[in-house]
Length: 94
Image (cartoon, rainbow, N blue to C red; front, side, top):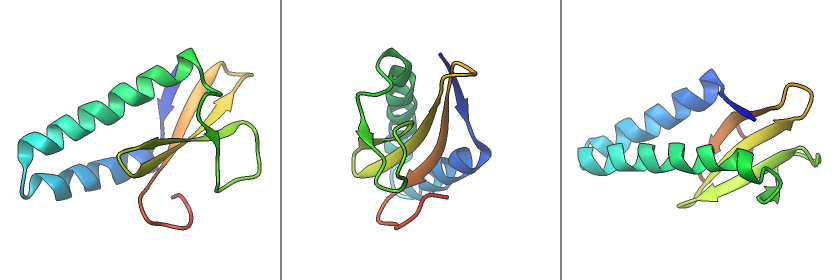
């Protein structure tokens, strides 16, 4: 399966990495690498993560990593994973 990262996801991840880098640049780089590594694992078992708390759909899942929720959609027709949400302490993904 192909992984697609939406602009909204990339923007939110980059904002968080920028925030972390103000105090700990190395930790920020490591955090971003760890998030990307977790996302790369999704295609192996896309349904292994919990059904999303934000949506009432089986094809949208939440990967929880270090208190953050990475929301993704499994698109069987396109054989792709679309990563679109990155949240911490929020009610809805953006």
